[in-house]
Amino acid sequence: MIEIISAGMLSTVQDLGRFKVMKNGFTQSGVMDAYSTKIANKLCKNDVNAPVIEMTMLGITAKFKGEHIFAISGGIFDVSLNGNPIRTNKAYVAKDGDVLSIKGAKQGLRCYLAVAGGFDVPLFMGSASTNLKINVGGFNGRKLKAGDILKIGKADKIKNIEKRELPENTYNNIVRVRVVLGPQDDMFSENDLMLFSKQQYTVTSDLDRMGIRLWGIALRGKEKLEIISDAITFGSIQITNSGMPIILMADHQTTGGYAKIATVISADLPKLAQVKPNDKISFEIIDIDTAEKAAIKQKKFIDKLF
Image (cartoon, rainbow, N blue to C red; front, side, top):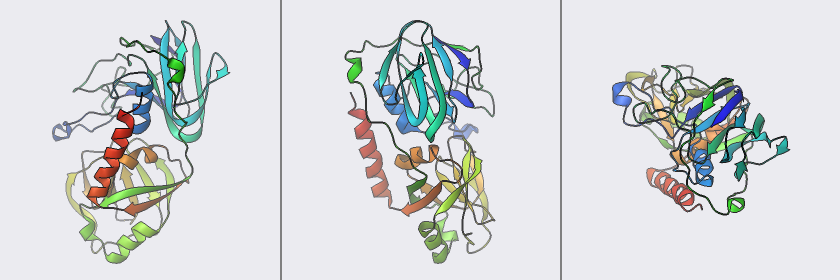
């Protein structure tokens, strides 16, 4: 078990998400950065979908109850164990009573704590992910707070723990993400598409687990940009009547009534999980075949770890 001493800014239990439930009106939820989550879990010899703690901007301080193996991945935070600095993307052993402190982000925005055996929380519709809007999943359907005690599942035995490490992730404030056009790209002129792919957008302060609003040169569209509401996915890029993009993220709504010019490919979604206000984002348009190859390449890398 671990006991939460302080809970940081926004810390929740998440897994890779709640799938095949949008037809029932439930959103996907799940981690914002699946790539880092999978790395943290692989370092702990967990299934990649094992529940983790996602932290935003400022992490938790927690006391271990019993001996546990843990790892942190994602953004570079100020992390220590019993006051001694430790790094991300490396497995560590915590003894009974050890205190893990995850302070502010130095690079990126979110980090992920995995513990060997995974956090043992009830599943809701097949997932451990927290949905804060309807207070279900994760730990009592809410963000963590001081005094919470999280149970940990049974862990596999792990040998050569000191060898379970990777280079730390790196982040900067200029991000280029690949997108596939559609499904409503035909509602935009050639000039709109050129502006969309050539300009550098600024990340506004309006960003959360639901979406990221960008600022740049407005896209006009051929006509009004409202549509009959249709399905939204993680990575959909809506263009509102202001001409500005909104990238929909893990807690996106199930349907939306604005034209979607493009969709961020799954392999690049983790980059967006780490952006901060005033960071710059540009889009590279690719085809579906290239997007699929990128997803396969990333999956093969994760599968081969350890």
